[in-house]
Image (cartoon, rainbow, N blue to C red; front, side):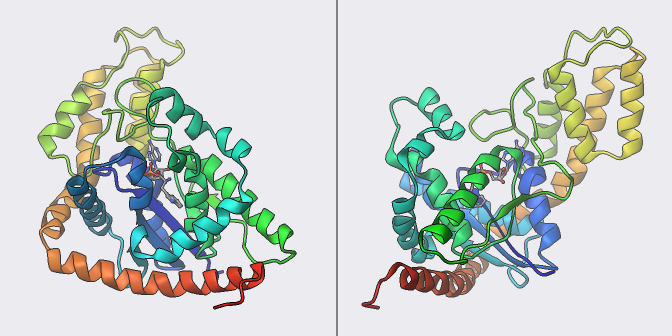
Length: 330
Ligand code: TYM
């Protein structure tokens, strides 16, 4: 069945392979068979108060990286969040049926409060409301995201159900998180623990050149190197295997796993293989990024074309929501 698929990426800088394997790769697979909306969440990026010059550049970067990775504006609606003002209007309405208590309990909010106690703005608190708005405004069914967004998706489902029940309608579908495997993916960083993230400085970027990739991978944290056969795998080594599984063939993964189990693994060799296989995925994308990023005309046209299509879908939903809620003037 044809479904409405939607997903987005914040415009906070270059995309890393966590974004690619967690989300982007799944978008690309879905665009042939579904009605797909992919957007750049520039409003979400404002929670960290970016410099106005970087703000625009970052949107251009993510857009170029989307297109270079294979998203096709003829097959999908590719747009920038702020070019669809209907999103901001529905967000205002949605804030009326989201509660402060549940927003304060969101893990991502609690983490931001812990990490950045001097910038706990209301935009951070209502971040999941804006994200749910992005999804519900196109009445999306499937949302390809990484594991880190699971809770936000659950909240979008809660808000959809709450609206339907508050107004006694069956209007919003309940969106589900989606990945082609059974599990949502969490791509770890190269620093031994946690996920790969833009602010963690532990990532490999789609725009990295070969030398940088090799250097980063060779420096990745492992363990002491002498492994007893049958020992429990340490987190940093598990992380390297997780990335290897994403970029390498089954035979390669099998080979290093057997070496590991036999206590004969040489991390240097495994890292070299890992770097080779990451390069195979990312370097062709990097080449296209460099071409596309300089093509102002193409980028401008793509944004304009995407905004027209996204606004059509968004304004239809917004008008229906307002009708349901009792707005009569327009
Ligand atoms: P963002 O920009 O942090 O990440 C974009 C996408 O990349 C995935 N991702 C990862 N997946 C696996 N492993 C990782 N290490 C990793 N890092 C990032 C994320 O799961 C996400 O799918 N709030 C969202 C953007 C957004 C959005 C939306 C997404 C705004 N509105 C509506 C979907 C639907 C965000 O900050 O993603």
